[in-house]
Image (cartoon, helix red, strand yellow):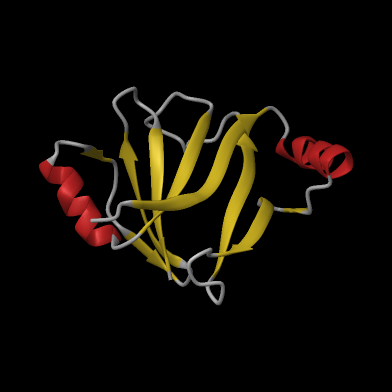
Length: 124
């Protein structure tokens, strides 16, 4: 079973997310918005399929990364999230929450062996 198909996003804590977005916009040319920046691309195997990777600075006080105490979180794109979660449960991986479904895909959070919270995303 294919698990991770790519990186869906890079999320990190900082003192001032708006200032961070402006710095990256000014000095590195990121096209930022309220959520950070979105990098759009096409799949190599089928160029008719589009994808995106999100870059997002979060406030250093965000609770979104909990229960992890780390300064970052990575979002991985996956295929068949429900089957993957069942497989991860059998392997003893900590599943933080239930699968949530939105108009842009399904999400769930897990913890790795060093306590990093990981976001798994099955795009629509």
